[in-house]
Image (tube, rainbow, N blue to C red; front, side, top):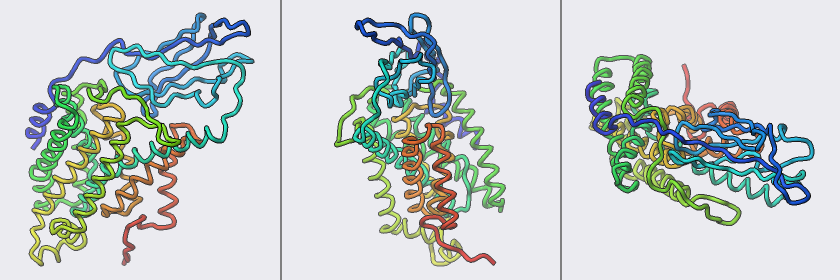
Amino acid sequence: MLGLTVLLVAVLGGVAHAQESGTSVGGTIFRVDDAGDRQPVAGVQLTVRQGGTDVGRAETSEDGTWRVELPGAGTYQVELDTKSLPAGVGLRDPDRARLDNVEVLGGQQKNVLFPLGKAASKATLGDRFDRFADLTANGLKVGAIVALAAVGLSLIFGITGLVNFAHSELVTFGALVAWEFNSLGLPLLVAALFGMAGGALLGFALERGLFGPLRRRRMSTTALMVVSIGLSQLLRNLYLLFFGGSPRRFEDYAIQQSVQIGPITILPKDIVIIVISLSVLLAVGWLLKSTRTGTAMRAVADNRDLAESSGIDVQRIILITWVSGAALAGLGGILYGTTQTVSFDMGFTILLAMFAAVVLGGLGSAYGAMVGGLVIGMAGEISTYWLETEFKYVTALGVLIVVLLVRPQGILGIRERVG
């Protein structure tokens, strides 16, 4: 089994690439005096983050310049500490103290601008509504991706009882395979098909080569969960070995101009991501509800012994669940990589959000995972309207706790009797 996994990663993952160098973000901080001349401002502190993690900090020199070296291409957040500005100097737009989506290409020295002047007037009600609308659209995008990745996790748990911590590596594997084919010159839409196929193939290998044989040996679900934790660590380190630690971007759609849709400012690729995610989720819901295979999957999840006695091939249904769930996870990883960057641990960074979506929606319920993912994504992103970005997952988990206090079985879960 391990040999097959290594072969999959080696063939589809390729060799590690050299880390991108010379990639940075910086600029010059200055104010315009009453005479119209530019005056550099020294001692201003800036922080660069990616995914809530600090990448670097800088302080403007005497000529107002600053620069932070980055680990590679990606989308970063640049924040200016307004408390470090000298007296009488402020941002022209107080809401621009933090730039949330600064896209930097490999080898690029990106410059960002923080216009200074006298203390700016407070943002108008219209400005605040526009920002809230932007966060809502971004929350829908994030929530749809989390829901897409979490559906397979919920299906596998519902049918086999396995809490699969290695599901995050299925998310990563789909994105890595798609990136490799995209870097070879294939359009991203075509490369995404290879990424989904790669995820499905890895899911097939894990079920046939590892978890299936362990179940037949009557290993407990708790022991299988521990195996999945070790498998997650193994796969993540194999990805690091073959892909490298430097995050990279897909060749397509790296640079786009935002479009205005009413009060919402959004990138075209984000619109496509939302449409694809919601369409796939609706298609999965229809397949589970209206097809014989979907009915069989729900029957096995409800009562495995009864389903088997009625003539359903349970082992075949479990294999289909693994393959389809892994393919959906791979697609979720590809869409997530399109919005952020592709890296060896990208799936692990959203594993907590996926588990929260599954628990919030109702354990074992595919429909619940869809709803839970949307709620987690929306709550986390919208909370940044009032809170710092670092607290968005805290807010999402707070929503999870409140819902479970009111409805312990989850939003769409079924209450069960104990004892």
